[in-house]
Length: 608
Image 1: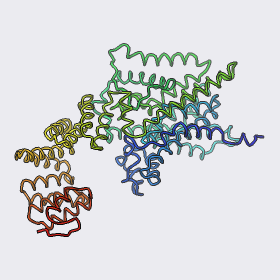
Image 2 (image 1 turned 45 degrees about the vertical axis):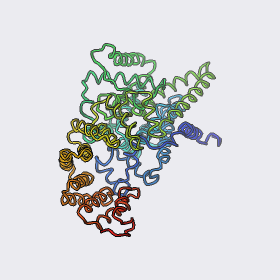
Image 3 (image 1 turned 90 degrees about the horizontal axis):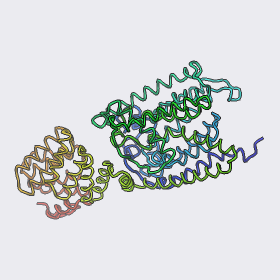
């Protein structure tokens, strides 16, 4: 009979404590790149937003409705409080570590507890746990492992205290698997993984016993994979020049990525949020060393299968789970790099279980004490590395600086750092970051538009117009660049008294409104340009339409006040200035105009 000490859940409690301690800096972190697109979608907060999450593939960043349903719940609980989201990610990671222990014990694999702690504390997992946008990894992995465990319990009725297999057990396992792929489509590899497990246990795969129950899962996984690939191309942009790779290049990428990921499992150093992106050259003999080494590894493990099938099974599980990210399929993230720590999160349990099983054999031998000491030391080092890696997620600037420290060629970090600096009013520094991003990747239309915005804020309207023009050359249908070009030409022409530039600005606003007919800022700015040209009827028309579209648009109220003032309708102009000031109490221009008209913010004073 077990004592009360044996009944206590020591392993899950210790796992939870170790994860909480190692990830303490992440619990104090904020929102970083792309988090807002997942966690801070206030337009999806109402109950109707939950319906959109499931029925509209374009409603969310990626069509993972189970994931976004969790974000919907978290959004209603936490709002914009980042620690709440981080706590959920950390809890899901701890849960996955415990499920891994349960799964390995179910399979009779030695060293299950060590494998769970290795996964819990491994620094490669930090990107998936500390980055809120990657909650899709922590959620899908927990569901993936729960589905695998549930399936094996159903599949092995002899281990269920004499109970035979029932449809309820299979249905619950299938439901968990469905939720996993609806959290992240990479979970679709689970049925293939279960076939590898069946081969490892029995030396063969039985059609009726092993394959038949998984056929519906293969269908679910295939549908999820095809749909996700379509969404990546249609809505996210996983097509174009960055993805024009031949089969030989993709094969070389896959071989290189496999060894990259395996190397980081064994030696997790020099981790980076974005690794350097390099396309392999099929003409280089050295590039073929990676896929050839992989084929050799499989050959050697196949030859040793009669002694032990475990290492070959672990290699197949690792490579198979990584397959969706190895380069054969287009992923939008390939725009930045062909490898990423979060892409190997789901695959890591396989090699870690193999390492833990080898450690268990060492522990059972003459060097048992040394094995226990070495395991403790390894876990302590991994925990320290994880704690250190978590700190880069404190805020966006810290993250981008950390990226550039490891990878100075990361144009995305330069471009996003420019946006961050511009938001703080540091436009000179923002210009430098945008220019560096464009030096590394000249084809960035958005960065050129942002460069133009920063230059315009510095009053360098001629240079800003050049930047906007380049953005439009790269993307002729770019609405923001078109209206920004109009604004830059207007300011440049107004300062120089150049009527030709003012006319060009109006034509650019016309083109911008052809692209976005109901865009209030373009209407307001064209109206202001008309007012400066003395075309007051057209100005009042555009400005009235802009306010009708967006009644809270303070600048449009300012511009309408200016047009009314030029029309001699001073009391109406004062009313618009007062409304602009109400909408934006920091609007100094509206306050000055009211003072000039002799009308205070509250409406006192003469206005005619």
